[in-house]
Amino acid sequence: MAEAALYAFVAFLVILDPPGTAAIFAAMTAGDTEEEKREQAVRATVISFVVLVGFAVAGGFLLRALGIGLPALKVAGGLLLFLAAADMVMGSTLLRASPAEQEAATRTSEDISVFPLAIPLIAGPGAMTTSVLLAEQAGGDLLRLAAVLAAMSAALLVTLAAMLGAGWLARLLGETGQHVIGRVLGVVLAALAAQIALDGIRESFA
Image (cartoon, rainbow, N blue to C red; front, top):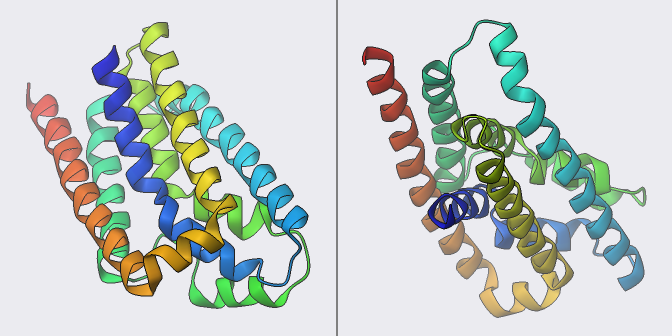
């Protein structure tokens, strides 16, 4: 159980990329007060939690209703996560908020907690896919599912802490440090994605 929770925590932590999210959050809320920043960070985290729990609980049911098995989900999910990893390593924006979206967010005084902060920065396609994959791997074991949800909650709390300390974190890491951490996490995610896809291929031929 502890091993499953640790695996889920690392998977969510890598895909959520707290340092990268914090850097974008700092840019988007540069003109806000500390109270506004805190409110938006907390609200975005809660929204992301609800979205990801929804995918974890209902995603598998929907896939089964469509006749999609776990091996196919692993292959597709692994490929999707690999694309997210490529985004992180290469600095592209295929599965992330585009520079235009980020720039538009910095120019607006509206609440950005739903878009683009919660979706797609935090609860993006990669995080949604990870939620469904890990929930399905639990195989109906409620304790294991609870461990996955607890790990997801812990990763979201780390992301929230990074956003709340975004200014300090940005000064500590610097732009180069943020890029290095993002790319290292991307490589780890690529390896994780490849393993998930290979497991799905192996299971489909078993």
